[in-house]
Amino acid sequence: MQPDNLIFLGPPGAGKGTIAKALVQKLHVPHISTGDMLREAVASGSPIGNKAKSVMEAGELVSDDLMIQIVRERLQNPDCENGFVLDGYPRTVPQAVSLENLMNEWKQEIKRVFLFEVAEEILVQRITNRRVCPKCGRVYNLVSLPPKSEGVCDDDGEQLVQRKDDREDTVRERLRVYQEKTAPLVDFYSERKKIVTVDGAAGIDRVCEIMLNTLDGE
Ligand code: AMP
Image (tube, rainbow, N blue to C red; front, side, top):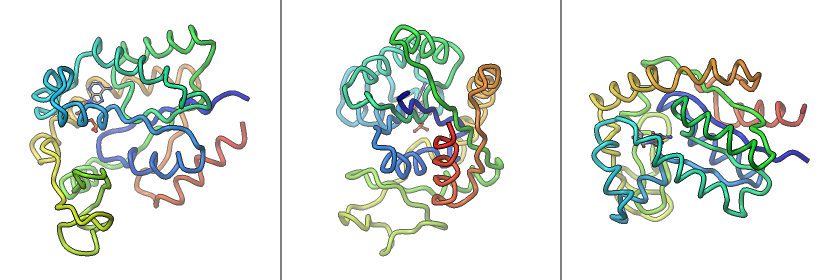
């Protein structure tokens, strides 16, 4: 059977991470978020983290060379045998070309690219209200998904924080970078007939159901 090699494409705040976390539990494949990997590298003070820190805080993209190397290594991990959900990668045409070459080299292919669509004002609202647990990574939203007691994680009682790049001015810059560098991937994957569009404003269960039905029908 062909592995479930999936890509989640869409602007920041479209719900890719939240849906990915739910979907991988059903598919039993790893959720590979390049943003999470970079944030871990920054937190640990590794050389990669030190290189990426200021770029991320400004809402810009980390270099293609570095990202291509990180993802190539990650996808070689045995946990990717039955597939993977790539969340936040590829984000540029050179990254997509490199991934395609990698898949060819390994005699695999990307099965589907789920494109998350959400109106820009909803994205800004969602991102600026996003809070995360620095310990376990659980993501909350002050309006739509608040923690049970204000400001602390339901799971471990840790004080929630706002990502530095989730502040409004950086969010606008991230959306601009998305339009310039990442939106061209919609054409790239449309030409390869891989895109399935999902409504990122629909509920988590509904979006997961649509995705699983799409994958089942293949
Ligand atoms: P995310 O959590 O996906 O929004 O990613 C947070 C930040 O990490 C982005 O704004 C970029 O600075 C960086 N980043 C994550 N993935 C990539 C990628 N594929 N290419 C370049 N930079 C990335």
